Each structure stands twice: as C-alpha cells, then as structure tokens.
Image (cartoon, rainbow, N blue to C red):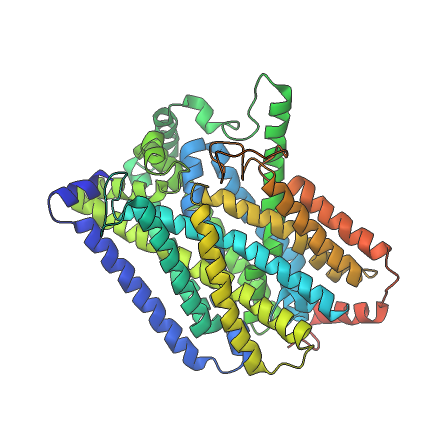
Length: 557
C-alpha cells in the first residue's frame, strides 16, 4: 500500500499506470480469443460443450481455471494469514472434494448427459418437473458463487488503485470504485458468454490457469527464498508477527474455539464439521464444474481431465500455504485487516512487499502488485464466465427447450435464449454483489458448496446408483436440500446478528452455525428418499438403460 501512495506522491503514479495497462491488456487478449471462438461456434454443441473437442489435458487445465477461483487465491490466502492453521482447512477441503468428483461422478456423467446436469437427472423421469428443479438449483448455486467472485473484484480494485478512506480516483472514493468494478466485471462476463460460448470461456480459463499457477509459483519461491527455503523459519516468523504466538499454528483460532460457555464451544466445533462436509461433498454438485465433463469426446478423456485437474489444483493449494503464512510473516495481520477486514487482499499485499524487497524500491513493489492483481482479475473473469455459462445453459436447455417448448425448440432458438439469460443472470449477480461486499470470499464460496451439496448431489447420486429413484424423489431432493440450505443461511449469523454479517445492524438470526451443510445435506438425501418411497412411479427398464449408458458410454452424444 505504501508503495502506491509513495508512487502517487512522487507524481509517478507507476502502480496505477502499470496496473491499468496490464488489466487492459488482459481484457483485450481475452476478448480477442472470445471473438475468435465466436467464429467457431456454429451449433448448440459448440455453444454448450465447445464441440466436445478439448483433450483431457486442456480440459484439466480449464477445470483448474474454473475451480481455482478468487476465493482460493484471495480468500484462502487471507484466511491463512489471519487465522493460521484454521485457514488451511479450506485448502484441504477444496482438494479432497475432487476425489468424490472423480470416483462417483465424472465418468458416469460424461456418458449419460449432453449439455447440463439435468440431462442425467431427467433421463429416466418425467422431464418437466425435474428439469425445472434442476434449473432453479443451478441458478441458485451459481448466484452464490458469482457473489464471491464479484466481491473479490471489488476488494481488489480499491487496493490496486490506491484508494484508501478519504482519497479518490477519477473522482470516485473507495466504495464507488468497488461498485464500478463489480459492474465492469459483470459486463465483461456477459460478453464472454454471449459472444464466445463454451469455446471462448474454456480458452479464457486455460490462459487464466497458466497465469495463476505461474504467478503463485513466483510468489511461493520468493517467500521461501526470503526465509532461506526453511519452512520452520517461515512458520515461526508468521506465528510471531501474527501476535497469537504458537496458537497461530494450532487449531482453534477460528473454529472449535474453546470458551467458558460449553454451548458456544459445541457450536464452534459443529461449524467446523459442517464446513468440512460442505467442502468435500460440494464439488460433485457444482453445475459449472459438472458441465466441463461434457467438453471432452470420451469418458476416458473425462477421467484424465479430472486427474490433471487434481494435480494442478493440489499443487496450487500447497502454494496457498506459502501465500498465507508469507503474508502473515511479511505483511502482518494488522496491515491486512486495515486494507480489508475480511483478509481478501493478503496475497496482493504480500506480492507488493516481496517486490519492494527483491526488485528494489517502490517501483518493484508496484510491478509485483500490478502483476498479481492482473492474475487475480484473470481468475475472477474466467470463473464468472464459467458460472454464467452454466446457469444460462440450464435456463435455455432445461427450462426453455424442454419445459416451455416441450422439446420442440430449434438449436438456434435455444442458443439465443441462453444468450439472453446470460444478461439477466449477470444483472442479478451485479445487484446482489453490491450488498455483499463485507463478506470473506472463501466463506461465500463455502456457502455455494453447501447449497450444491444439499440440493444437487443427492439427486445426482440417487439417479446414478438407486434403481427405485423416481421423479418425485428427484424434485423433493433438489427443492428440499436447496430450500433447507438457503433458509438456514438466511437465519444464520452470516446474514444478520454479528459485526461481519451482510446486515450488521439488524438481527433476526436463530440458527447458530455459519455453514448449514451438517443439517441441509442429510436433509436433502432424506427428502430424496422420502419422495421416492411415497411415490408409486417406478421404471426399472429405464434405469437399466441409464446404468449401461453411464458405465459404457453406449448411446452417449
């Protein structure tokens, strides 16, 4: 931060000029790719699934690009910098979740569906109720996830442009600049999706994955070099600078907090368990990740892409350790909180500090900050494009083509509706993000995971593995899990009743946990079972067909 202010004071404005130049360059390159991709997008398969033309490695990179979101890069680094050990739990949860996706979902989904999650769910059921439920669920999860990315973009821009309370940029104070950024990111994501479709979005994600891995590798090496490649020295310095001492490296700063009140201790431990369950089970129900499996030609390529993704994502989450503890040791918790109370700016602040040390003076700090900021923006743009594509595809393919038009819509009509939907979803995300600016982005994503694991996962697993499962079971599972998760979040301390809530001045919370997963996920599975048992509908022949298709790929598109 000091580098920016010093550069501004000296009249050079190096950081701002560099940041804006890099950002404009990045947007220009990604828009160029999007326009190129739009010329290759001729059919619905091209728009929804990139013509199924990507290799396992390309798709693995793109999955990494889609999954390593602003939450991972900014949010987890911030949580580790502020809470030490407890922040790293997010990294572990996000990574382990891929084993569930690989073992239970990836291959079977690729074989059984065409464009969206609902293709699998509706295969042996009545199309209209199931597809409507799937579209509602897809949009809800995507909106939660979009909020996290846009809030991250807003937090970043105030740091990048050196706007502190009391200072302005182009006549905008920090709050106005955050809102302007959220609107800009929203506009760009709508362009990527409506113009480039899945092909454009995939290439943007591949570029972003390469940039992000490169950027975090450089910072990790610099942090380790600063401490002579001795992890013990790094952890010791982080613990000392955090002001918490040895407690910083042990569980209990954020979750499982022991207090005199036994009830509070119990709730804190339950919150940790709830978060863990949501993170591990959520990935296999995220619509924007599930549709990535359709972009490869075969189930073997789908498996291979998940293995590549696990390698890329696993390496990245190891890097977050260096980012988080490095920020704690070199920037300090107080400096991070001063810039952003939720810790979302820890990684860029660390980059700036390293730039000053290794590249010399304010200009070096400005160069590193601008580079990492550009990487973070690429991260945000790639992920929001994937999310918008997933929700607009679901609206067009599931709701418009199969519910409203009863399967009679032409491919051209369907793709046009998907493009119009992208505008609507973008607008809703922009408005909601403006209100959610005070929340930590990793935390917002954890909520999206809880909603996905509560509504989508029970329906997908029952559909693939339970012979008796039927339409009312699918509808009950999705609506039951989804509404339980959303209602519990609304009445939790996340929305009201604490200083870090969305509405800190109001208090209507009665649910004690911040993450609803421990209640809403079993409830989703229970609803699916109950709905199935109470309905007489039963089609074993169709299940046998789905089983053969999901395991062999026979008849898959």
